[in-house]
Amino acid sequence: MVQVPGQSNVDNLNTIRCETSRQFKNIKKEYLKAEIEHLETNGKMKNIRYLYRDINDFKKDYHFGLIQ
Image 1 (cartoon, rainbow, N blue to C red):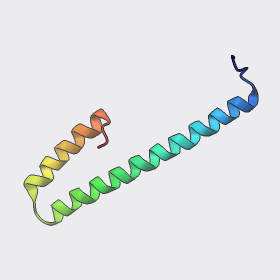
Image 2: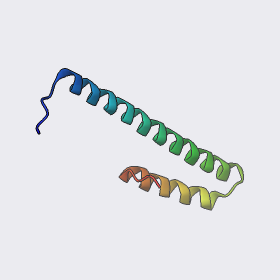
Image 3: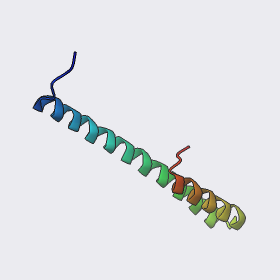
């Protein structure tokens, strides 16, 4: 059966879309926060080689939108 796109169906879809977008934003924010803390730790401990390696990896992953 084909469902008629009524206003209630459209409202439900928009609600689900907003909640999903919010969840993905929160996941991305947590990921970025953890990566920045990791980079700060390497910077404070004077691990310059690992700091630059991690920055390059982070830029590459962020560019392609990969979240591990």
